[in-house]
Length: 254
Image (cartoon, rainbow, N blue to C red; front, side):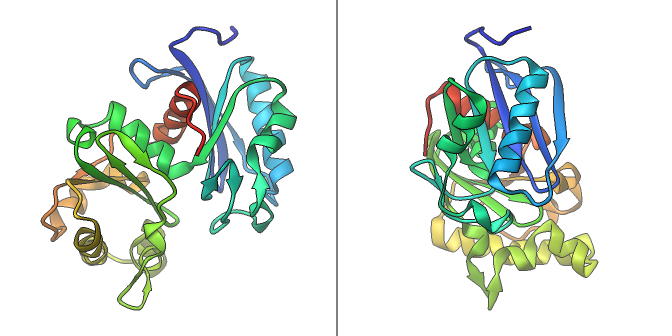
C-alpha cells in the first residue's frame, strides 16, 4: 500500500538505540499499520543513519513526504548540536543528507522534543493547547519544547540549564534516577528543583511531561512541589513519529 491520502503522513524518529517509523493518521494521531523499528547503527554517523531511514521507507513502501526527528538543534535544516548523538552530525545539512537517500520528495527535519511536543499539543490533553506550554521529555536527558497557543518556539534546550551547580538533565533525567538508584521520592525532589527554576524563568501555563517514565506518572507527579500544573503526556513513544509526520504535512522546516 502506497501512501498518497492527504490525511495520512509518515514520520521517522531517530533515537540512540532505535530508528522508528510509521504511517500516521493525521486526523487522530494513531498509527496506520505497524511501526517499523531498526537498531540505530554504531557509530550513528549521518550517512549510516540516513541509509537506515531509507531502509524503513523501503520496507514501508511509502512514496510520499517524510518527517524526521533527530536529537539535535535544527536551524535552517542544519544540525548545530550533538549532545546525545555522533559529533559528526554538527554542521550537517540534514535536508541535503536525507534528500540524497530518499530521492524526490518533501522532507522536514526537526528536533525530537519539538516534534513530540507538537504531537502532544494536538492530540494530548486539552490543557496543552492554550497558553504557554512547556513540554518536557525525561529520558537519557531532558528534552524540551516551548509552545504558545499551539505555535512552536523551536530548539529550546533547557535540559542544559545550570541549576544548583550542574546541568538540569544531569540531576533530574530518568537516566540520573537509574544511575544513582534514586527512589521516586528522592527523584521527584530533583525534578521539583528543576521545574521550580523553569517556573521562575518562563512562567508557563502548564508543564506536560513525557518520556518512558511518564507511564508511571502516578509514582512521581503527585510528589512534585511546583505551583504550575503538571500533567502527563499521552502519546508516549508515539509522539516523535506523530510530530514528525505533522511537521512535513504542515511544511514546517525549522
